[in-house]
Every structure is written in structure tokens, then in C-alpha cells.
Image (cartoon, rainbow, N blue to C red; front, side):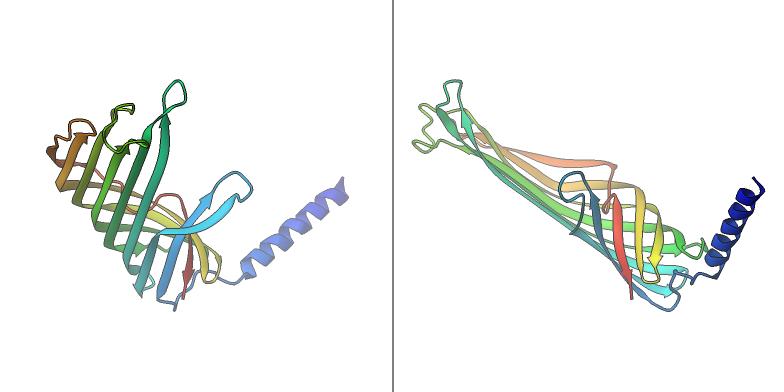
Length: 227
């Protein structure tokens, strides 16, 4: 029993000594950082890197950083529509796109040798649009045997501002993972939506505007380099 206790104490002492002498991972002199999303998912490729958003930071000093972020998304889908007897009703084409650009500043707290928590302020502008259009696969827009589709096209422009809380954890001196949460409000204006059906062809246009909570930036885990 005494032997096991001694071994446990020795192991604890060794681990503490190694940790206390480990090199500080958090960089001091490097002024730039670049980050992309780190996606965790199940399947054959559980971890993937992508860049629908890229964030760049410039450290004015170890505690203060200016930031800018660009995010973009694009979706396109075309699907065949069938009736109950599996005859073609038509083809439905859908698409959407969004572009966000933001700037801000962060104040980094002391944290630990590896952890760098921060608070910041951010502002961004957004623009995007979407569309849906159904077509008859046999005879164009006559739809004598096709489905009735409600088609639309829409677009908008907006801005937002908010506060951000996050933290970077340095795995190595210049390599880190991070996460952040943004609380903010934004307004969408100069928005519009045009709606028509394939049979009537009459177009109804609606102006769109809104004000409310705004999700800015990219959620989830981020992977970054400091240089």
C-alpha cells in the first residue's frame, strides 16, 4: 500500500514539474492571426476544415487586436417533382447566396499560458438573395399536365452591431483553436420579394425590412494560426 502511494506521489510530482517547466504556448511577438472553421461531424470524415468564413486579426499589442471577417455561402439545388402516379410534374430550381463583412476590436485578458479569453465589439454589413422557380419538364410553362408552382426572387441588404465573447486555446505556440459567441442586433432594409405563379404570370412585389437579433460571424470551433 505504501509502495502504491509513493508511486502515485512520485508520478504527480513528475507531471507537475513537467507542466511547470513547459514552454509558454501563447505567443507574444507575433502580430497576425488567421482563422477558419473546424467542423466536427460523424461519418467517414469526422473532422473537416473549410472556409465559408475567414477571420484575420492584427494585434496592436498583446492585449488589443483589430479584426475583420468575411463570410460567404452559396446554395443551389434542382429537384424533379412527381405526382402520385410517378409522372413528371416539373423541375424545381432553388438557390440562395449571402455575403457578410465585419470589422471590430478585441481586448484579450491575461488568462493562462495557453488560454487567451477576450471581449470585443463588432459591426458588419450583410447582403444576400434567394430564388425558387418551377418549370414543366414537358412543355415549358403551359403546365397542362404539370404542377402549380409559386415562384419567387428576393434580396436584401442590412447592417448589425454587437458584443463578442470568446477564447483561444494554444495547442502549440502559433497554433490554436477557439470559439466565440456574439450578442447583437441588426436591421435589414432595401429588401424585396417578387412572387408569381407559373400559370398566371402576375408578379406581386413586397418590400422587406426588419430589426431584431442578429447572428454574426461563424459559430462552432475555429482553427487558427498566429504569425
